[in-house]
Image: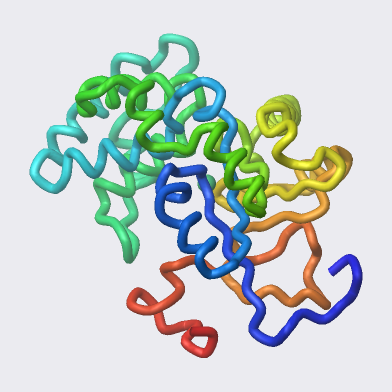
Amino acid sequence: MRTKRDLPTNSLLLTFDDGYIDHYLNVFPILMANKIRGLFAVPGKPLTENKVLAVNKIHFILAIVGEDRKQDLLATVYKLLNRYRGTEFDFPSNEELYDKLAIANRFDDKDIIFIKRLLQMELPEWVRDRIIDDLFRIYIPISEGAFSRELYMNFEQIRLMKRSGMDFAVHGYEHYWLGKLTQREMKKDINKSLETLEGIVDSNDWTMVFPYGSYNPEVLAYISDKGCKLGFTTEVRVADLQADTPLVLPRLDTTDFPPQSENYLEIT
Ligand SMILES: [Zn+2]
């Protein structure tokens, strides 16, 4: 985009989010064997603190509970909501929360959507993190540190990939919805994520992959100030390098291709 040069027809950029060990063990060798450069968006917290991102804790709790123990999980969530309600701030009753959030979509039923939306964005951050940690301890039988080391890439692996020609992008520190944070929280998260990836990304020319595709004008102004030149969202569309803004490029997800979807058959 910067040089205004044309890319070959049907050019693709492959992006891989969240820094999973799977990207090192499986994706990296395939890209190397095919002489393809990939862009890997890595959140900071798992790397520096051996923690598991809240979004991944929710995924694994739901997976391990499955259909069989879903009602048990729901009851535990209600119990924890009651425990924390009114302790620091207040939030609505369990019934009100369920009515507001439990709207089934094409991927999940009402109960699952309720738990996901409640824990991903509805509750204030302090209570959300506490409930997720409580659920993690109740349902996941190994320690968070051990789990984190099994789930994510480490610095050594990232440096090896970098030396082999792979590209890395900033993906936040806590993997928050950046567009929903206060300005102070947003700046803190971006700065921490940049510190974590020092030496791995170029501080004057780095790429942002917005967690959940979330941003707002303040986020864009701030990252631009900090040397970000390219950004990727979760808007589902083929990028148009003549017309699109470099900081908010759209992407296609694997689920936009067969067998899940036939929307972009012409690309395959
Ligand atoms: Zn992500």
